[in-house]
Structures are given as structure tokens and as C-alpha cells.
Image (cartoon, rainbow, N blue to C red; front, side, top):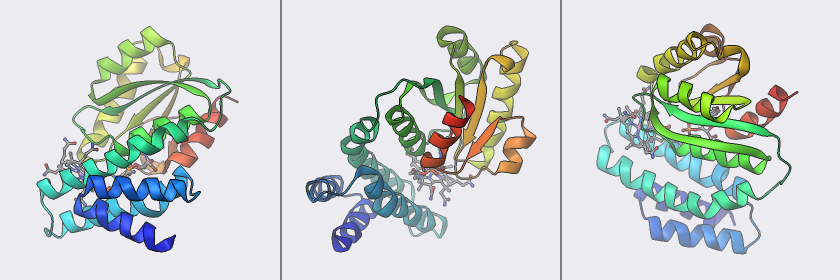
Length: 211
Ligand code: B1M
């Protein structure tokens, strides 16, 4: 199996969506589970892509085709993540904050929360503070999840939390933040109720927030 995981990682790095999807299917047929496939091959592949981008070996087109290959694999895996449990656990609004277009990690978190029984309202990417406020009014969630992948858009999380407070809704929701550049310190500084470094811990955090 390790050999197939290695091949899958390479296919994602090269942006070969069809080849990657075939290998995901092969792993699933061999009894591997969705979370292991994401953690062992897909996330490490994106880390390599990020490193290559930083060292200017890769540019935006390579970043995009790799992301599409990853997304193609996730369409096979997300239903499996979401099917692992059925008990309704609470309502979560989730979105990538204003100025930020990265959604692969946010989508994994949403799928895992769904799998843990939460009802998910996914607002998508580049969501303004007002967009979150309107969605809270419309959906009355227990938890609001904010995702950011850029150091430049972390500030949008602060703006969003401030907008939620200004709308008088801060005490009505728990706010969870995550994304590669975030830290627990930053989360505390901007007044979030919780920070999670990955999707599995996001589920634990959300369950904890529901008491
Ligand atoms: Co961009 N990008 N990107 N990118 N990109 C990064 C983030 C970068 C680190 C690459 C690098 O330089 N090494 C860098 C950011 C540098 C920084 O700010 N420190 C970067 C840059 C610079 C940019 C652009 C500015 C490039 C440019 O245009 N010059 C541009 C910005 C566009 C914008 O957003 N306005 C840009 C664009 C893009 C693409 C559109 C091409 C594409 C995104 C496609 C998509 O998402 N649909 C892309 C990609 C693919 C990446 C990398 C390679 C991979 C991101 C990813 O999907 N990781 C990334 C490098 C990297 O991360 N290694 C990079 C896999 C994913 C599963 O992990 O998202 O961290 P992650 O999610 C994890 C956890 O963080 C956590 O759980 C998830 C699952 O375990 N988590 C949460 C995430 N959200 C959470 C929310 C929670 C809880 C946990 O609660 C609510």
C-alpha cells in the first residue's frame, strides 16, 4: 500500500487529476480509509507543492493544477468522511475569510464536522465580515468557523469577530478559527473561542464547544 500512497502523492504534486483519482479508488478498494488517504498522501503532497512554490520551482499554474488534482480526489473522499456518523450535533457556519481564496482545508474540516453529525452551512471563500453576520442571523448556528491560509488575511478574522460583536451576536455563538498560518496565541488575541491546527482536532473542539 505504501507504494500506492507514494504514487498518489506524486500524481497530486504533478497535477495529474485522473491518475490521482484512479489511485484513490485503488486505495479505497484495498480497504484504506478516507482520512488515512488525506493524511498520508494528499496533505503531504500539498506541503511539497507549497515548498516548491516558495522556492520558485513551481509557479501559480502548477499550484492550480495540483490544487485541482487534490480537489478531484476530495470529491471521492468527502462523502465517505461525511458518512461516518449520523447523530445531529449542532449547527456550524463555516467559511474562508475575506480576501482569501483557499478552501481545500476548509472543505476537509466541513466534511469531517458533517461526518461527526454537525449540520454544516458552508459560505465558501472570500466571505466578508458582513457575510458572516448575515449568515448567523439567517441560520442561528451554535458555532462559526473561520478559515485563513494567508498571513495577510488573518486580519480578516479579527475584523469578522469584531463585526459579530458589533452586531450583538458574539454571545450567541462559539467561534472556531483555523488555517496554516494561525496559532493559539493569535486565536486568543483576536478573541476566538478556539483554535484547531487540523480537521480531526476541529471536530474534537466543536464537540467540546457543544458541551
Ligand atoms: Co496559495 N499560498 N496562494 N494557493 N497555497 C499557500 C497558503 C502558501 C503557504 C504557499 C507558499 O508560499 N509556501 C502561501 C501563503 C504565504 C503566507 O501568507 N504565509 C500562498 C500564497 C502566497 C498564495 C497567493 C498569494 C499566490 C499568488 O497569487 N502570488 C495566492 C492567494 C490567493 C488568495 O487567496 N487571495 C494563492 C493561491 C492559491 C491557489 C488558488 C492557486 C491554490 C488554492 C486552491 C484552493 O484552495 N481551492 C493555492 C494552494 C493550493 C496553496 C498551497 C500549496 C496548499 C494549500 C492547501 O490546500 N493545503 C499552500 C501551501 C501549503 O499549505 N503547504 C499555499 C492542504 C490543506 C488540507 O491544508 O488548508 O492548511 P490547510 O487546512 C488544514 C489546516 O490548516 C486546518 O485543517 C485543515 C485540514 O487538516 N484548517 C482548519 C484549515 N481551516 C480550518 C478551519 C478550522 C479549523 C482547522 O476551523 C474553522
